[in-house]
Image (cartoon, rainbow, N blue to C red):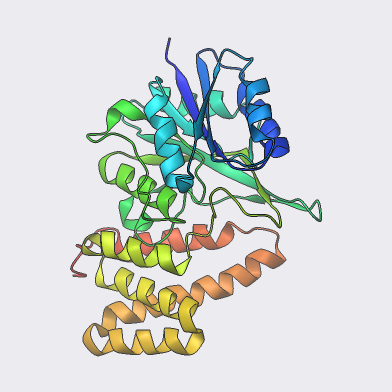
Length: 312
């Protein structure tokens, strides 16, 4: 019997932790363990983890000093025993059937390295919900541009990869993007077309800040993976970093600098930026936030899927 290990970092969020933990423990699969990593909480979180640990499937680890999202997850990974490895944030939830559907996808395709899914975005203050349906098929060429997996939700066949599964703690909030990309360099990553994860947006801090567009994380991501990118992809990331640092004018200056050396590549990067902006506005009106990702995945695949990192 294969064991599914789920790692859940937490910090100062006992009530939401209970909901998240129950969503994993209530999955109808045999062979399940939940490793909760209390990342130096200062409230009643230890009381909640003690109650959850009454379930023999729960393992609790406490950090005396906060290690951050990547470090906390890595400590949890080191304590797991499963052949399959999954993740859930302490303020989110796995929806019913999530584990069995993703494990089924992995078992149906022995070559598949990672299975993820679409997700539901829940705005806790307003109660508004919207489903995010991104692309289902893509490879490392597309993931170098965008985090199409979007969340730290997925199940990994951990024995399928040459190196141990671990997050890069220097990359918040891009550590999940970096992990999926490294997996995609070795094995296919698939997003099954089912809503299986509930992502909760609220006013408080997250253990992980989804928004892989954060400037600091994107800069490190570009430094780490730039050699694997085409010239257009690098120009795109530099332009996004410029916009996030100093606004639209900085983005345009970055594109102009890139165009002086790589005009064709920069033209495509500018097209991606323009399509992204227009599609996101249409997607919001249609209550279809994943429309942008689906469109950009096809756009990048058609243009860059077979190109080499030097941009030719």
